[in-house]
Length: 323
Image 1 (cartoon, rainbow, N blue to C red):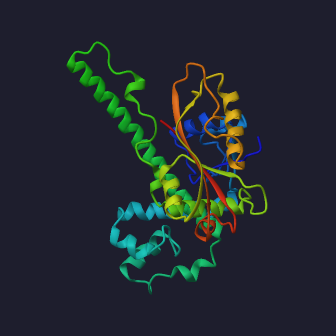
Image 2 (image 1 turned 90 degrees about the horizontal axis):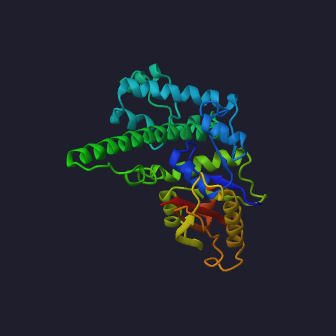
């Protein structure tokens, strides 16, 4: 297999995203905002199995990011997200670019300091990498919290269904498969989509994950909002694949590995414009009953190239989803 799959633009992988990626792909590359996977045993196991290739950040890179991140959380805890104060400090940026120490922020709000330092005056004091990592760190926390909320709501739905079944006198409550819908309740990529892609691609470019003069990777997302954003903001699009329903193997199926390699060959042919795309779909003849969706498009133009930190090149993006 010669394609490098880059999962983007998320640094936190939800369980549903992970299930989708492992269903379609034998391995993928991932950008976590961490020096290792010690805090996530599932990802650590996949890393040891060679199914995830991470682009870790060094502790030296993360130390100033973590400091600013903790200062932001401390300030937010004190002020409970007061919108007036947030707007006066954040201006048009999603992260602090001035002195973020809690006491300094309080002084600025009270007017005891001579105004807020402009973003331009401190731009040169922060590396682009650290600023991008700071944004991704905040986005990661948001995604982690939203996933926990999703799981709690799903558990609440299951409890409610069992109670309703008991009240109605049904002999058996709805099965796990019936009561559990595939996918997250919300598309996390719908929040600050452009900023996510820009920060993610900036970090990947500096870490060598994106090389303008090297082989073009395939950018893979599980977010329909991300794919829609690219389609809406790009005038030069080549739609290569758009399959609304493709049968896939369940993650516990012994036939999955062989199918995944066939699927990767199929993607390679589609990227190179070879073969009959519909007729060449890898078949599944066992009892697996999962279905997925796949879209593959090439995006180009100054706007998209700038967003991905590239120039004068077509960017292949693939959307994969489970149904």
